[in-house]
Image (cartoon, rainbow, N blue to C red):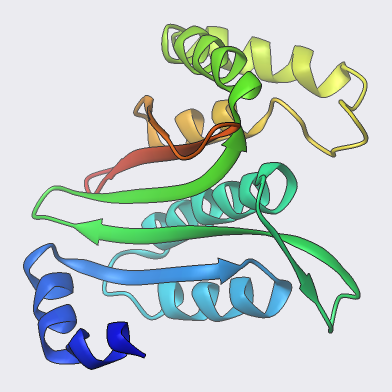
Amino acid sequence: MAYIEHFSVKTFKQQLSERQISLAFQGIFSQDVLALIGKSLRNTQESRVIAKRLFAIVIEMAQNIHHYSAEKQYSEKDARDIGVGIVAIAEDDDHYIITSGNCIIKTEVPPLIERANYINGLDADELKKFYREQRKMPQREGKPGANLGFIDMVRKSGNPVEINIKDYDETRSFFILSVKVNKEL
């Protein structure tokens, strides 16, 4: 209760505005939440192409959270555990920045960093080829599209993915993923 007493909606709104955050969500990423995010993005003043790219990247991030978050909550509607995380969209004059965050098991950190670095080092043709190769690979641990998310985000945004890892507790890290989408096509 003490937290609520010190929380100011006005201050929070000012902070969101100062950082030009147009959308922020924290919780479980169900189909209903994704539908609301999609509706919000369709109502942006940007072109349909940019809005579609933003939504596609948000979907990729939400799927990463859904499948790989070390923190899960039970969804009554879906009758299963769903990953918990955060997604936010900020913008400035030239681009949008889509950021997600969720807990992951610490042993997953090195392969994530290695994969992101590898994908960030590929040019457009190499990305396309690598994407095709990965689509042919068997699913990892029964998770559909495993390994395609980073590739897809880089291809859709035209920019590298940025990863930041913070210690969370003894066994988990907090994984922050950011992607910049230029407003100019």
